[in-house]
Amino acid sequence: MLQPSRTKYRKVFKGRIRGKATKGASMAFGEYGLQSLECGKLTSRQIEAARIAITRHVKRGAKLWIRVFPHKAITKKPAETRMGKGKGDVDSYVAPLKRGTMIYEIAGLSQELAKEAFRLASHKLPVKTRMVTRSQGDILG
Amino acid sequence: MAQSTLNVLKRKRMGKSGAREIRKEGNVPAVLYGKGTEPISLVIDPSELKTALSTDAGENTLLEIKLKEGEADIPKLSLLREIQYDYLTDKPIHFDFQALDMKEKITVAVPVHIEGKAKGVKEGGILEEILREISVECLPTNIPNSFTIDVTELEVGHSIHVNTLEIEEGVTILHEPEDTIATVLAPKVEEKPVSDEELEGEEGAEGTEDAASEEAKEEGSEEGS
Image (cartoon, rainbow over all chains, first blue to last red; front, side, top):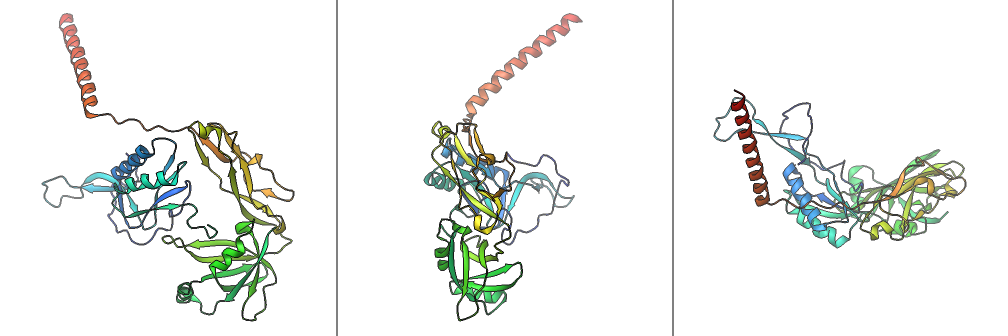
């Protein structure tokens, strides 16, 4: 699973995720992409589960790019612990998502295969998504 | 050099609300700028622009912008410089046009077209397009329509580089000669997931080995003492 090898600060504020993505919102590498339509957080487990769903479906003959990385540490207090005594320990890592963020990109396969692979992957993710193609935004397309 | 005419309107209301009004009518706000040209805000009909750009040169078509409603036309030819898209609907929300000085070199992105099916792809490899556009510097009259590369002889692990492109005189490529345009990658096979039973079996075997080695050690130490 994805997680940072080294962080400057172990624990970070929770924060709020609002607005639309200005970076990482367009197709950069592949032919088809899976774009987030909501703000949210993707845990490293969810990213991995969706990746496995895609690679299992396409079997071989496709290249996949994961465009998000879980940089943000999420802390959790142990079960049956009283409140207080400081912030809990780091439990997992998440990737904060804004509306429009491109989560995965894929190339080297047919559109039907990519559509089905992304449909299977979207079931593993906590946000609404849609598939985009490279020619979709083209004024000449 | 492909050239066509584009009829536009001068934008009357500026600002965010004005732009929204234009988009509501089905048009797109735009700006025209250039060296020695006063920037003008315009209103473009996207279907008209699409027709104007449907030449061999595509988005690099030189446009003769004509203002409707009897205003003086823009004397210079223009080039579509940027299209901003709505990130959710993929509809264009703004266009940038640059008025060109025909004697001055400009930098443009020329699309790369891939022809044929690579040998490596037939063997199960994946064709990866790394550069989909090539930046070139040339006079507006010399802009190439596109670069076509033939990948039929490309095997797994082989690539096509920028230095193999055929260019006309007066065109300079702004990439390193060794930059890769397309490559055929070897297919990556997903490892089969290990079932729980297999894992338990392995752990069990390891456990017995460990126990046996520990016993042997203990025996050894007893003998030594």
